[in-house]
Image (cartoon, rainbow, N blue to C red; front, side, top):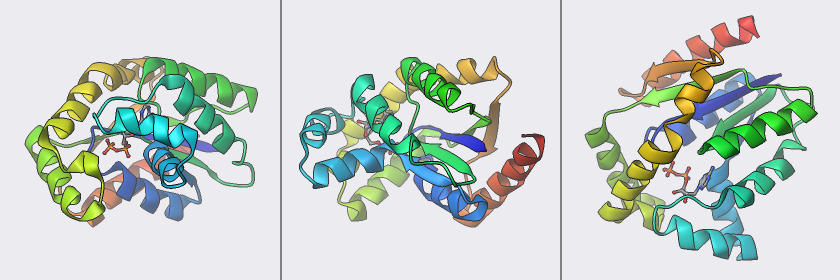
Length: 194
Ligand code: ADP
């Protein structure tokens, strides 16, 4: 089974591309951001608690996100695998994911990092804020904080996966189709080696 992590800063295009890859390769798409927003839409206790962090551009506590992921991963049988979007975002989350997969006799196949320059990220997020209804995309200081949190807490994951020779990069600039084509080519290679 393929277990791919689509990685990159906020605004890199993970959601769009994860969805396309999911359809193409028969993978379930797990987005912790989407799961948290759906908890919030249903006004669950978890969702309301998470909102306090999301509104400030901070990370939701690891325990919350990890338990949400565990519930979702147990539903993964009968698929070609999973594409993770927005998870893991910290080293403890990566370690928890390794443990969960190990207990299912599975493992991460690769982490693919979408590379996009900083000024392009801010531009994309502000533009998304005009239509997405996401309050965290409308405020420049929240956007800058999310990128800062990415640099500090999430980027160290590159080393974690690089040490396991699972780290790959893809140019995240250009049209959605161009980026999608680059990702497809890479995932085909990874799939053959898997
Ligand atoms: P983006 O990548 O554009 O910031 P997401 O939808 O992935 O958007 O995440 C939105 C918010 O949800 C994050 O700013 C964070 O508060 C929370 N979140 C999502 N995934 C995680 C995670 N794995 N760990 C902690 N918080 C998360």
